[in-house]
Amino acid sequence: MKHKILVIEDDMSISNFLVTLLRAENYEVISASEGRLGYHLSLSHQPDIIILDLGLPDIDGIEWIRQYRNLINSIILVVTAKDDHPSKVEALDLGADDYVLKPFSPKELIKRVEAILKRVYSKSQKDSFLRSGELILDLKKYKLFKNNDEII
Ligand code: CA
Image 1: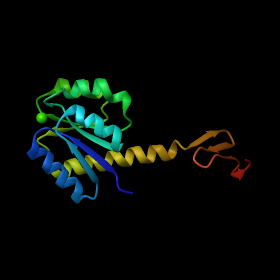
Image 2: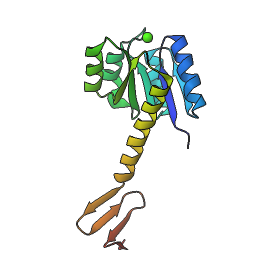
Image 3: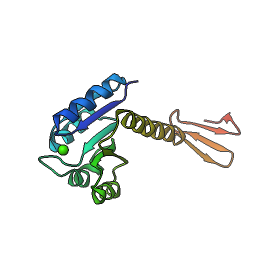
């Protein structure tokens, strides 16, 4: 399964660089140069990860997270300048999942994306089982086990 990534970045050289880099790593990539367009694309495409630049022309990245975080399920990876420490902290407080500092190396960004996907997908696998004493409920298959024997 190809993971989908949405890049929201107004600087076209950075955006093109990210799109090319991520496509080379076999991700499906879409991009937006403005925040509101990015929000609409995130609704229509349901990306696994949104790479969000905090300095956008139409809406501040922090404001973007504040307004839209609860309306989308995607993981938000913030890209921010190195000296902009308050924004980074605020972005995380508002529900961004991780951040990368500009300027970043291609390798660093790819590693960050891989780590996030690994973390999220291993977590969702664990979350599909509920345990209570001897009972295990498989939430994906809707089956109940007791001492590893299927009951329902
Ligand atoms: Ca920018």
